[in-house]
Image 1 (spheres, rainbow, N blue to C red):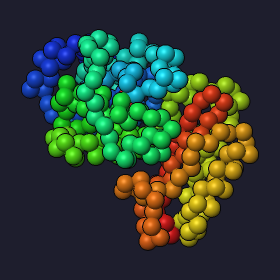
Image 2: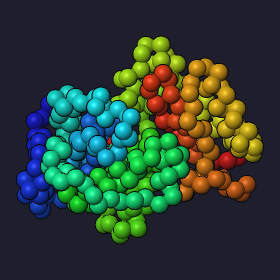
Image 3: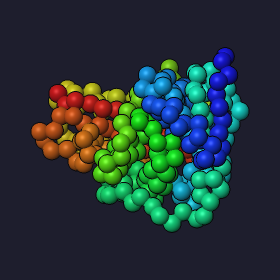
Length: 281
Ligand code: PAF
């Protein structure tokens, strides 16, 4: 393990460290790093001379009844993982560094931020977009990497970067999965053994729906309903199963071929999200 990781907590010190160090490739995270994050870090290395990760559990993107307080914070193991994959700099601000005064300027995403995840987690994308823009302003990366597991988040950030003409190339990374198909997520750690055994059903149901579309099925709302019932019949609580256009997450027209199936559903008290891209047959 090469210990070249520099851990920096303060904005002026980070700016000094990054001055002239670029191109900078940046991977923002909320910590509790798993193989999905590590894949993004490795990908970042191919895009920058200096790779910067951040760990910051962003209060702004959690609703009042969500898991901000119990969100897993595993700083030391996270640092070891970042060292092991050769990350140059970890920006790990505390709340008073990033929000020295109550944040009252926000990025308000358009309608894209109010559908799907945004409908079930009001304010979520406003919190995400605001902190991501702030982190971009601090780190000033040339490239930033976001996982496709958070498909809608990736779209919101791409749109923000495009609309605000930020000089940052947004690169997406693949969803990392356990052997049984469950998408890796920091929230998987909340699952009991029974829930963990049931959790891969979410991806299986998405794959079945995807196969039906590839085979030519066109009754989108019937397919969404059938997938939802498969989950409900196995004690899931379902927020949504939705087939949308990859480009803008709007409802697909009959001629649309590039689709994405997105789902959010609960195993007990744990909310899981997943998605799968599909080209209609
Ligand atoms: O995907 C995440 O971990 C967070 O939403 C992000 C992008 C780091 C912003 O807090």
